[in-house]
Each structure stands twice: as structure tokens, then as C-alpha cells.
Image (cartoon, rainbow, N blue to C red; front, side):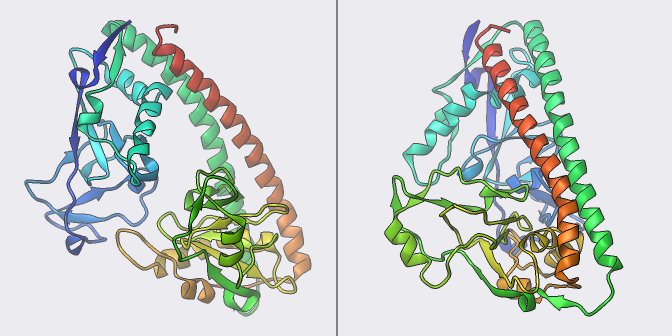
Length: 377
């Protein structure tokens, strides 16, 4: 299989960054949606900017690549509008490369490892056009590219089916919990009243260590679990200094409060870690609210609506600590909470099982991609 210089097979076009002062949160005449990396995952909190000749635009069929930061290399499709400087648009040479084949190559370990390897040169990982001059794309004939893309499409469809099953379980659990909440009778209680303390992670820039106590970010809290895989660590001494006023203890609840807000998880036993200030730290009063009930409550449609309405900012929405403390719900007796948590935990356990199966599918898909671009598929 011949190797073709990347920029012979595919050009790229960087985005534009209009001033934040021009941002609007509602569509209007002569405005266009400004796509950012987060918009490809969620349609929450869109941003619109005035149409201008210098704006770079894309349509739903275009293959976009996240250019820098934590999402570097992420492949994004399915949105139309203007796009900002964190994204680049690929422009395939149709005489050389099939668009679906290109999409699979860009998400393959071969290309992703190359892009991620560029991150070591600076604190803010990123790549530019010059970087892509130094890499190549394996290119069989167009007919062979289409055959390979069709095989990978089918494998990818299996992964997506499993993800949809997980998403349906998530919707089911939240809808069931919200229905329970609406059936309760009584006085609204604020989270500030049922928590001993509501604070957030460290505001200081810690001194990093090569190993030690894991330091977590917003992306480490997903699917009602805390992922302790990280590339950032602090020393035991730094940990003790930064947690002097508020210890992180089992049964505490973490809540993502900036950017991708609204994800909650309970701190498990036996883990020592610290986290950034974009994560809120709630200490439930055990006489008033169960930790897991609080986690489910924070992710419920009712509190999500309160977060959406009250979040501040435009480009990066923030659920402030004061807003968290004011959020309201009717809190049933602990005995009722325990029964509800037991039912919701069954849904969560099934989701975890599906997530593990999805991980296996992902590993298999990555293996297929590697073989495809070595000419072994």
C-alpha cells in the first residue's frame, strides 16, 4: 500500500475567532451559529455571531478535527455553521481519497498517535498545517478504500448501537427519577440545607509531580463514576496543603460545574485524589440526604433545568456555588431515598455492564483500524 503525503491527499482550513462581544445566544437575522468543539457533543448553549466574509464555514458532511487542548485530534462531523480556531476543516482530494476512508484514517491509532505526540512540544497541545507536512496517509485504490471504509462502517455501527442502549438507559433512569420527584408532596428544600458544605476544587495552580496523588479534571467525571486515569499528579505534601480546609472523603459528591456541567459522582472508598475548581464538591448531611440520592438528584431533569436557567457566562457556562446552594427539590425521608436508590442502582449497574462491553467493542474497532491502514484487512 503506497504512502501519500498527507497534504497531497487532504488540505486543511483553520477557523476564525470572532470577538466575544459579538456573541448571541439566540438565532437572529444575519447571524450564523459559531461551532466550537463542545457543540459536536451537545446542542446546549449555542453561540451565534454576525455573518461576515472572513468567517470559515462547514456543512454536515465536512470532517472536522479538534486542533488543540484536551480534545486534540478528535474527529467531528454532522454540524453546519461557522467554526472557531479550535477546529480545522479537512478538504479531501476526491481524485485520491474517499471521504469515508479519510474519516476512518483520521480516527485511527496511526493518525491519533501522531497528533497526540505533537502535544509534548508545548503546554497547550496543538498542531498546524506544517505538522501535517511530516506525515502520510496509506492509500490503496479508490475501490479498495471504499471496501475498507464499508467494513469499518459496519464495525462502527455496532459500537453506536451499544452506545444508544446506554443512552436509552440513562434517559429511562432520569425520567423515572423525575417522575418520582414530581409525585412528592411537601416543602421545597435547597441543596444548601441538606449539605454540610458546598465548595469546589483548588483555585491554585498546583506544583506538578511525575507521580503521586492523581489530579482530576471535568473530563474525569462521567457516567456517574470517577475515572482516576490522569496524566497529572501532585505530591502528598501538596495534597495535604490543598485539602487542609476541606478533606475529600468517601460519600462526598462531585459535580462538574463549568463547561460540560451537570455530571455527578459519589467519591468511593480507598481513593486519594484532588481536582480542579471546575468541579463542585458537596458534602451531604447523612441525617438528611443519601449520597447516591444526591448524585441522582443532581443529574435529574429538574435540577438540570435549574442549572441551565441559572448558569452564567456565554462561551463557557458556569454553575456557580451560590446557584448550587439555591437549587431546590423536595427531599423524602431517608428510608424512601434508600428504596429509590436501590432501584436506580440496578439501572446504573446495567449501564456499567454496557459500558464495559462498549470498551471491548472500541478495542476491537481500534484493532480493525490498525490492520486496515497496514493493508491487512
